[in-house]
Image 1 (cartoon, rainbow, N blue to C red):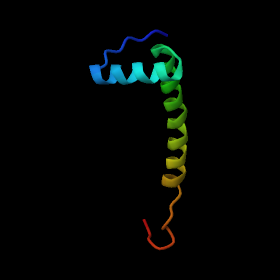
Image 2: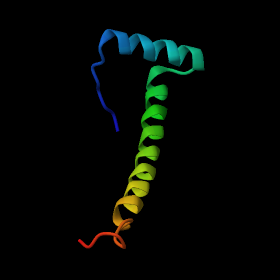
Image 3: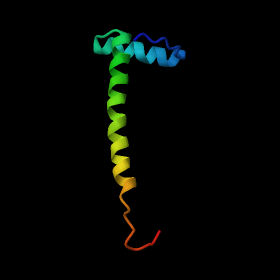
Length: 63
């Protein structure tokens, strides 16, 4: 999938610096950053569901 994103100048500069430091092009760096973020989101969602579904104080309070 191709996506076109218009970044502010400061973010573009940061991406260029990070890509250069990693020896990658900006497209590859952004693809890796998005993949990392997407991998992180389900993990957090699953943890929140476990926490929110389990009634922790039901023995003290009747709902």
